[in-house]
Length: 455
Ligand code: ADP
Ligand code: MG
View 1: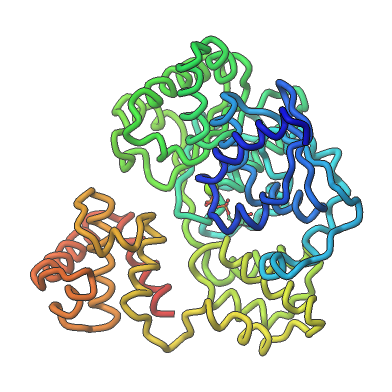
View 2: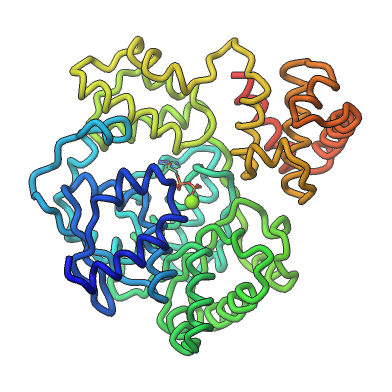
């Protein structure tokens, strides 16, 4: 690395570290070098194309966010592989990736423009499995991709983590670009939007910022808009961006883990804007869809997946699609590395640690962990005392489910939840019982958690 690149890389790594887990950083980014930097693009040298594949598939949003935060604006990301032969799987990578995973590297050219925007070329409509849980969200996204700003504008899709929101956002971007390569697609997470705005403000570059999001944009894809909650100035700017785009006949597509009405500090006028278009949800897939997703993924990755193994995984891994895919990749990597056939026994053996096996009651810790993940709070917050609404709600749900699933006494549950009084547990139970009768969304969340924990 020349000196300039070394300095830039140091700055970028510092911005990247908070965006990914320490483990991810060590495994995937410590061997990366920055070898070229221009106003518009950054070129990274990676040891082999597994790194490129893995970073593109999993860490592009984090990398783009770090770029914006380090340098003030997005750049195209390019990779250069130190070796052109596919890298060997070393032991560190082994648990995460299947050897088959990088087989489709060669169609890179066509993907260049979309990857430069941070879109994962694998997230397309073709690779998306439609089921009763997501059919409206899928149909609306497809309509938007085919005729931007003509059908549902804005389109707002919401749903829990790992259920395919980002996939649909990328699919819209990829499709629109393929249909019309001159279409200006702007894709970013709401965090990047916020960072970008902060930098523009600091550096007095608001005109450029506005041009990027208002003038040079035919389709704005804003992922995870719940991150704008309680960020007044960002929301204000987004409101104006929204109006400018909408008036200019441009498409707006946002995703969120909550309904517009549930996002804290989301202003009324912005909420009402979303009523102009379509609001569609994505629910966790049922077992048939889970099996279909596994089969599709296996076919794309050239993994020979027997039906009984697909059914086993589909039945037991219920939380979300990301975990479902992760378990398949893990299994395939294990099989290909040890030369073992991918059988039901192997699946049961390899995945025993991550499965909540049918019949075993989950313990309190597991319930807390699962609820925390689904409701996007930290497990230690559930056991803690903070009263912030989303945390308090998650705590109540976890207590409610613990009582229902384990039947432990109120004082014991209180004890396990960081030493709370038994009356807190009783109140939580009553409150959730009442709320599930009034709020269909909460009721769905509780039902799906119960199903998952009782599996
Ligand atoms: P979210 O943004 O809702 O958290 P993602 O879009 O990142 O979820 O999805 C997680 C993983 O699951 C991605 O790899 C995605 O491609 C895959 N996935 C989700 N839903 C589907 C689906 N219906 N068909 C195929 N793959 C899916
Ligand atoms: Mg997402």
